[in-house]
Amino acid sequence: MLPFQSDFALAPAGLIVWLSLVSGAFGLARTLGADAGAAFATALALGAMPAVMAYLTAGYVDNISVALVLLGSSFLVRAITKSTIEDSAMAIAAFSSRRGVKISAAPFLLIATLAILGSTFATTRPWSVRVRLYAVCIGMGASFAPFYATTWIETGSPIYPWALTIG
Image 1 (cartoon, rainbow, N blue to C red):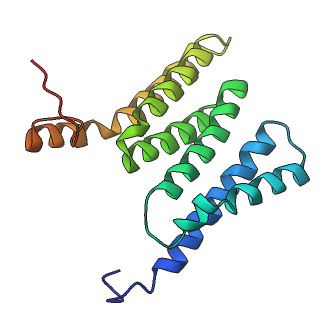
Image 2 (cartoon, rainbow, N blue to C red):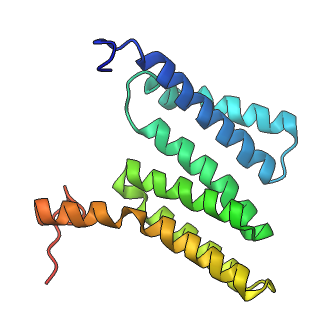
């Protein structure tokens, strides 16, 4: 909000987040086999929920978190069923971003990474494709490691504000 010295950009930013959330719901419903009408109704129902609308212009991270889970889940389903590097990379990127928004998403990232790696291991694709996919998953999944290290050094706990001592 610094360039405007006000909350002028908050409404457009909230609209972008809301559109991402609705798009993610629509995409996930279509990926799971819903027809366009049912997917559209699902997306609008999710977008019109009071919990979503309450945080629309609040600048709080819950709507962003839900949008990233929906978008990541859509790519995760495609990555598991089709085992493509692009879908896997997008799924891991969405769940990594979600983990960056809230620490509580670390289990989502771990489960998504293990699901993608497991489904790739079970396919008959050439090893060169599998190695590239493993590198993408591990690289994107480990992209948050420096933030944990910095937090650990500065606060004494890698998952601050929760207390955790190791060693």
